[in-house]
Figure 1 (cartoon, rainbow, N blue to C red):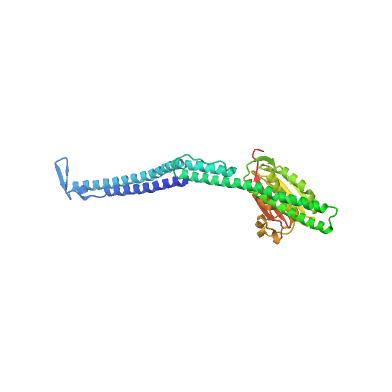
Figure 2 (figure 1 turned 30 degrees about the vertical axis):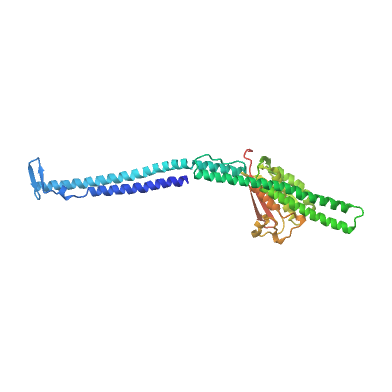
Length: 383
């Protein structure tokens, strides 16, 4: 905006200056045109007493000399006007550009402060900060007040959401925990029949499915909130911990896991990032085939760190890649099953990565399966 304003000032001045110089040129040229009464009088007087009439020799010599002087004078004068206009107009246009740039900076300085505050709030996710612009009541003040009002409403909304999550976590998990305990006690009774045991096992599977679903929904809501407690940690340590925890399940399913964990320092909430890596590894193990393989890699780039999880499995069409990041969506019409999670794993991965200022990309492997890459901002304080 500042550049456009300065260019507009320079352009307007260049146009008006050009028109002014052209007008002056035409006026001067018209003023220096031939005038019969001035250059061809009825007679001329020399030395106060000698008078010559038209067609006399001295008269014609004087008249021709006057015509020559007029032509030379007109040419030099018009050349001077053109030269002055050629240099003066662009130079003054450049001055107008500088003055326009300076003036636009003064006019837009309040808007720059508003923009800087808004950017800081957006990057820090701190909804308690306000612009609180104290300038004159004008357009910028009105914009700042509207933005502060919007932040107030967002802060109240997020506070209500956090309270709802906390209450829902307690209200939903407690009955499921009680149900699981009661069913487990009933199944383990000595007098329990085979039918009761089979029914209890089915109920436990359903209860486990509901627990995973609730945990996934709560994690999804938790991942969408602002990450306020940013602390440094190494992504390779998180990945190593997750792989150690997933080793038993991978062994049961006959899946081999390979790790190449280079140092990848980053900042954020380590608990949420652990959930991100855990969902990636569980997804790679559970959506695999017997004797399949999983590769987990962490590394640091210039300004970001990466965790890459690749696995073997069924071929995945490229047009279905975006589907796997939607809640409760599976590839190939696969129905939700308790042994494969709640259908929220990669949705949680995406929201946690975005909450940390990162990105998630997935691409199918030619041999089948997927390669999922998560990029997070690197900790620049670590060389």
